[in-house]
Amino acid sequence: MTNFRLAVHKTKRSGLRTSDLGLRTQPFSRWRLWVLAACLGVPLLAFGVAGALWLYERRWLGWIGLVFLCGEALLLMLFRRWSRKEGALLPQPSTALPAEFAPRDEAAWSLVKEYLDRVDSGKITLTSLDQFWSLGQEILSQVAAFYRPGDQEPLLAVQVPLLFRAIEETARDLAQVTADLPFAHRITIGDAVRGYRMQQKLQPAYKAYRLFYPLWNWKNALFQLAVTDRLFDVTKETLSQWLLKWYVDRVGYHAIELYSGKLLLTRRFEQEVAPSSAPHSAENRVAVRQGTPESLRVLILGQVKAGKSSLVNALFGEVRAATDVVPTTARLTSYVLERADFGGAISISDMGGYEDPSVPQERLDEALAEALRSDLILLVVSAINVAREPDRRLLAQLRDCFAARPELRPPPVIVVLTHIDLLRPPRDWAPPYNVAAPDSPKARSIRGALAAVAGDLGVPPELVVPVCLLPERLYNVEEALMPLLVQVLPEAKRTLFLRGLKNLHEQEQWELLWRQAQATGRFLLQMGGEVLRKSVEGVLTGKRM
Image (tube, rainbow, N blue to C red; front, side, top):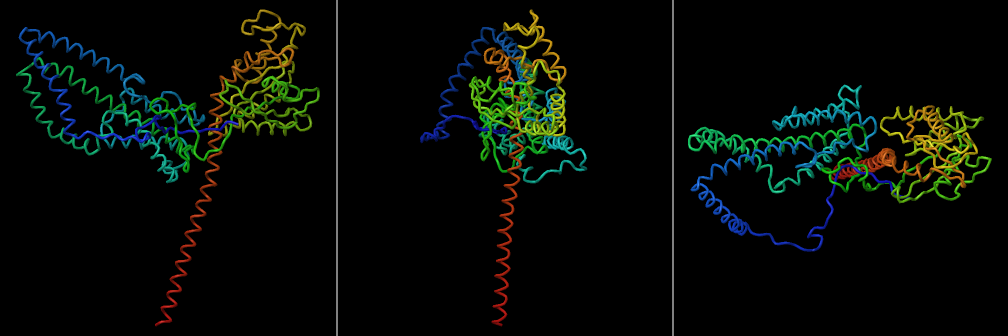
C-alpha cells in the first residue's frame, strides 16, 4: 500500500550546504573586501572617465548620450511589460486554483482573487504600513463572513491557537518569498527605517538640486527626468506591488484554511516545491509528520450482473473475482493494483450489486456509504439493461450528499458501459469501433447506447467508456479505460487529500483532548499537593505557638 501524503505550502530548498559536509569557510574581513572592490572598480571608473573625455573632444558625446537614452527608454518599456507577466522578472503567486480546496473553498477563493485582480490592475497600491495591515484585516473579515454568515462577529469565531498558527504559516511563506531578494538577508528593519528617515531629511536639498541642475546641464537633467527617475519609480512600484500581491495571496489562502477548518494545530506540513513556483500544487504534497498511511481508493459499483467482477479481472489481467451466473460478491471485496502509469498502488474495492428486490434501499445506502469513503467511482452499467433507475437514484443521492457537505470534494465518476458486444447486430463483432464517427451498424449501436446512458445518468459522454469484458473478446480496457483513469487521477487525489484531512482533524481533536486532560490532571495534582503542604505547615506552626 502506498502512503497517503498531505502538504501545506511551506518549503525547504533541497541541496547540500557546506556545513552538511563538515566544511567551514573563513569570511573575509571588511577592509579586505574594500581593497578587492577598489581593485575592480577604480580601473573601470578610470576607463569610463577617459572614454567620456575622448568622446567629448571628438564631439561624439551627445550622440552617444542619445543612443544611451534610447536604450534606457527601451529598458523602461520592457521592464514595465515583463514585470506584469507571471514568472518573468519576479516569482509570482500561482494563478491556478489551489488543488486541495473543496467547492466551498473555491467560492471563498474567488473573494481573494478579486483582491489579487485589483492589485494587478493598480486599484490597490501599497501606500503605508497602516494600509498594509488594514488590507490583511479586510481580507480576513471577508473570508470569515463567508464561512460564518450567521455570526455577528465572524472575525472572532476562531480559536486562539489556530489564529497564531495561521499567522505563523503566513509569515513562513512570506519569509521564503522575500528571502531571494538581493541583500534581503543583510538589510534589517532598522536599516530600512534609517534609510527612509534619511531620505525624508534630504528630500528638500534634493528638490533644490533638481530645480537648479538644468541651468548647468539641461541635457542630463532631461535624461534624469525622462528615464532615470521614471525607471526608479517603476522599479519601486513593481517591487511594492509584487510584495502586496504575495501578501494578499498568502493571507487569503491561510484565512481560508483557518475559517474552513482545514488548518491543523499539532502537525506541521512541508512541501518540496517553493511557493514561488507552485504554491498550490497537489502533486507536490509530501508526507505529514505523524500522518496516517492511506492509498487512493477506487470503488466499483453497479447493479447485479452488470459486470463488476469481470471488470476487476480485466483490470488485473487475471482472474481475481469469480464470474458465474450467480452473483458472488455480496459484500465488499478489496484488491491492490500496482501500475507504473498510476504512480504506485491503488486500492480497488468491488461491492455487491445494489439492486436487490428484497432490500433495495438498504443496498443503495450501503453503496452510498462506501462511495463517501472513496476517491474514484467506477459505475458499471450494462448496455443491454434499460432499467437504470437504481443507478440514477444512487448518483442523485451521492450528489445531494456532497452538496450538503461542501467541505468535501465528490469523487469523480467514470461509467463503464459493458456488454456492448451484445448490441445489435449481436453477431457482428469486429473491433475496433469508431464511436466518434460511427461507420458500421455496431458502431452506431454503441454510440446510441453511450449517448442514452450519459443522458439518463447525467454524466458527460467523455466519462462513459464502452467496453467488452469477455476474456476472448476483451476490448477497450487498455485502449480507453486505463488512459481515462490516469487522466482523472489528479482529481481523485484532491478528493483523497480532503478526505484524509478530515480524518486527521478527527484524530487531532482526540489527541488534543487527551493532552489537555493530562495537563489538567497534573495541574490539579500540583495544586492539591500545594494546598496540602500549606495546610500541614499551618497546623504545625499553630502547635508550636
